[in-house]
Length: 490
Ligand SMILES: *Cc1c(COP(=O)(O)O)cnc(C)c1O
Image: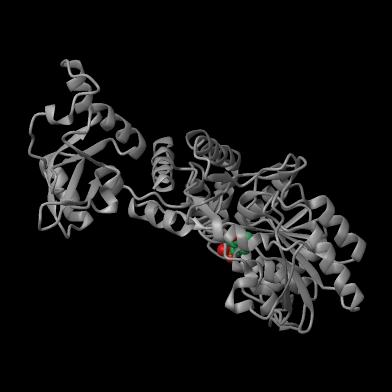
C-alpha cells in the first residue's frame, strides 16, 4: 500500500537496516522515523536515541530494524487539530504524534516544537529603552502628534543616516506621498519607480494623479537596473517629457547601485526619491542608505528592522523641503489662531508616544542589523550543500542589513516549497510581485535593460523570503533551514 507523501521520507520497514534508518534520519532532519508493516500500518517510532541504544547493545549497522523491540506508540486519529494534538502530547508526555487514518496508516507526523511555535517572517523586537520614552510621554501628558520625543527622534534619525533634516510621519507610505507632493508631481506627470517592490512605493504616484513607469531590476543587486533607467530616461527625453521624479527602492535591506543612478538623475535633472523603508542601517560604499536622494524615506511599520508599531520618516539635506513636509503633514495650517488654509494638507504627523518607541528602537539598530546578518550567515552555512538554492547577492559596494534573507530556487517550485514550510508552521513568502505584473498597474510602461530577460519577473517566480526576525533563536533558524532542505530534497 503506498505511503502518503507527507510521511514518505520518514517511513522505514522491518527489513530496512539501521544504516538505512540513520541515513533517513539525517535527510529528513526531524529526529524521528516511522516503522511500518507491509500494509503501511505503524509498528513503532524510531528515534536517533533508539538507534544509538541498539548499536550500543551490540546491533550492527547492517542489522534489520526488525531487531527493534515492539513498542506501542501514542497516536492520534485524523482529523486532529493542533490544540488537540498538543493536549495529547502533554497528557502522554511525548514530543511527537503520528496521525493515523481509519486503516491505521500514518498520514502525518506532528512535532511539538513545530505546533507550539510558529516561526513568522519578521516580528517586532522591542528593546529595554522604549518603555522609558513612552512613560515619559505619559508622565508629561505629551500624547499629541507633536512633542519632545518627535523632535528628538527626528534629530537622532537624521544623525544616524547622516542627513541634516528629518520629519517624522505616520507611515512610510505617507512619507513617499509627501515627497512626491513636495516635488510637485501632479496629473499627467510621470514618475519612474523600481518594479520589484511593495506596492507602497508606487501607490503615492496614483494619489498625486501621476503615471507610474516601472524600471526592471538588475541581477547583481535585485534592485533598479541603472542600464534600464538610462534607457527609460533616454526614451522620455526623445519624446520631450522627462519624469518628475525617480523612486528607487532598496530591496530587503540592500541599497541599489546608487552611483550610476544618482549620476543619471543629475544628468537628466530629475529628482531622486530613495525608498529606504527596508534598508535603515544598511550602507552603499560606506555611506548610509537613505541619504542618496533629494529626499529619502523610512518606514517603522511592525515588520521593519526597527518599528514604532507604525510610522515613517522623510529626510533631506534641504531644510525648506523638510519644513514644508512638516507643514503639509499637519493639515497645512497657517500660523493663525483661526487656522488659515491656502493649500491642501494631510494628517500625517507621528505621535509623540510612538516617537518614544522609535527613540528606544534606534538605540538598538546596530544590534538588529548584526542579528539579521547573523541569521543570514547561519542559513548560508546550514544550507551550504543545497545547490538548488542561490542567495540574494551582496555586491562589493553593498552592506545590507539583511532585513529579509531572500533566495531563489532552481529546478524546484518555489510556491510548493513555501507551502511545505507553511505545513511546518513556518512563514516564508514569495519575493514581491513586481508592480508591472500587478492588475493595478497593467497599463503602465516597463523598461528593462534591453536584454530579453524580465529580471524582476524571474526573481518573483523563483524567489523565497525566509523568516528573518532579529528575535529568532539560532534553533529557530536551524528549524527553518532543515525544513527548507527537506522541501528542496523532495
Ligand atoms: C514597508 C514599505 C513601505 C511603506 O511603509 P509603511 O510604513 O508600511 O507605510 C514602502 N516601501 C517599501 C519598499 C516598504 O517595504
